[in-house]
Image 1 (tube, rainbow, N blue to C red):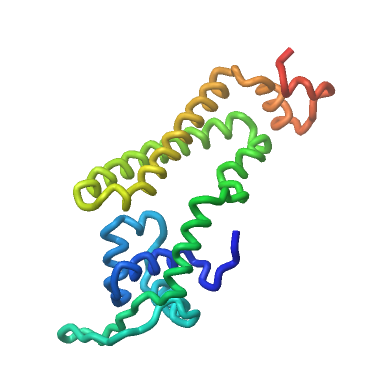
Image 2 (image 1 turned 90 degrees about the vertical axis):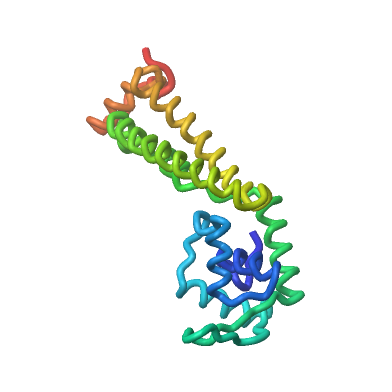
Length: 210
């Protein structure tokens, strides 16, 4: 992945907002939250102003005016620059067209699940499955609400997140089924190794029960 002058994903979100029209940071946050982008990345005031400042420093956005609304402090309105427009397009092209090599945290955990033993693995996978089901319910509800407010092109990342979570739920259910039924090859050898620390003389026991 390309090393960027402002690599924070919130920076990309800010650029996408001001790509439409000039706006001040409070309006940027409101637009992003209205579109559900705060589900993809936390939008915190301190972080937002830092990102806006960095984008301005590197010439991706520029201040155009300061506005005052009633008794509130003055707010600086920013617009995207030609360099900022080029950056956001290049960034999105990279994200859409490039497969990221770094594995997800769950995949990294699965690669070492043997250190836990099957009983603890079953307990933790059940815990994860419950969390996935709850998360999916909330995502589907959010998508249902947003569909009446904005075009689908602004919601495809939510659809993708739901599809990925559904795929993970199916896989976890299937893996849990193998573990709890004892159908997974080598599960007894795995349990013995976890309880005693002794590897079987024939490592083939981890592949197929004798």
